[in-house]
Image (spheres, rainbow, N blue to C red):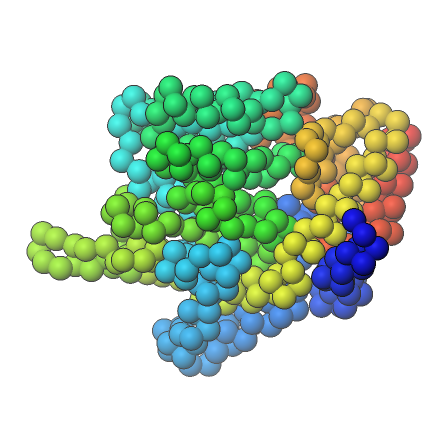
Length: 409
């Protein structure tokens, strides 16, 4: 790259004002929050939006408050649509990513013998949902093999299974919750489009740290939460539903008066948009907080935020790799801001408690969360650390030093 082109790229690169972003994050003053893969710390505008609506509900009534804020409510769908590059009519609000995933699965008319093709690193709740489908409907679950180096699914092998097994559903998790692995969801999607296969993507951990373009991914359905790297409130998520899925009449098993119209004593008609996957009752304060969180993430710049988070995670892995007794578990050349490691000589709860005592937020993952992946890695538990763009290099150093001290204890 020429010097002039290099300078041009630098000018295009958004510069994050970390100090200002931390000032917008009340929790950053009291803890080292490396549990963004669990819940990101709320930004002040998100908190203010939620409290403001709750005060309005208290002042004039819940129904009246939602009517008064109807324009802001519609803003949620527009904000999410801009985030993942689709139309607002393709977005449904959900109580969580798992809620969205279950609604999506319930819309597929599975029959005995149908195949669900997935990966060895799909999220634990998704894997359990597939097993429940097998128990109830007799579907077959097929796991595509990983690459020989363990760095994600073997896309060629998965494509071969698509051609030979003709699955009713192809499902993949973009970033598994149990490691920093990034799965090649767009590569999988290209094969699904070529073979006209229904494709469901779990973007729970990638929303907010990776740019998501549903057309580029090639998915029919995509689920995500708002509480993690988008830094929204708990009890919130969304479902993307493609035009094709809407046009072909997919609808959730349980559909209510919000998602359909009762057109006669023996008939109903689903609404035309993804609202058919929603329910009538909404936590409006939560939804408005989510809208603000998505706008905040867009304002920061998801690509820039994700790059910084990944850089902090990379520095964290490098530091931890030098600690005696620590084994960093993440694989793949392209890794997200989830850092997992095993440590000798400690029980899971005791190790996390020792970090908690140092005001370092983290999360535990157990064998049952990732039976296949942890079996391959021969671990019963690991600790997960997940920095985000508002964290600092000095916090990375502090965490590495804390782990070093505990390892030597």
